[in-house]
Image (cartoon, rainbow, N blue to C red):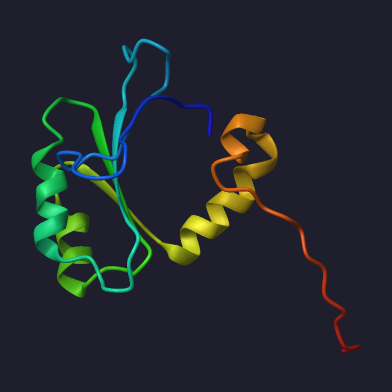
Length: 125
């Protein structure tokens, strides 16, 4: 998507932020994006959304919460009504975004989640 990602947390404790992204290499242009990623089957709770909101201190900070298990109804309401911008990304949206932007990515970025096109025969309709 054209962002610089100077910080991608290693596995383990990360302080609540897995990725930090900027529009420019020095991070001087807003927004600064902080991303939390949860890969699991259970839904993300309102408490986890509030934790990310608490990490968005500077003007122009944007939070993205990616959860492969989706979000509780309370978590969705909290994100929508937050004083800072929080974008919620479930598994279907993550896959859709990945497919849309995959052709534009560098080979290094593609190596993080390699995709292979698979074709299926469709019955006549």
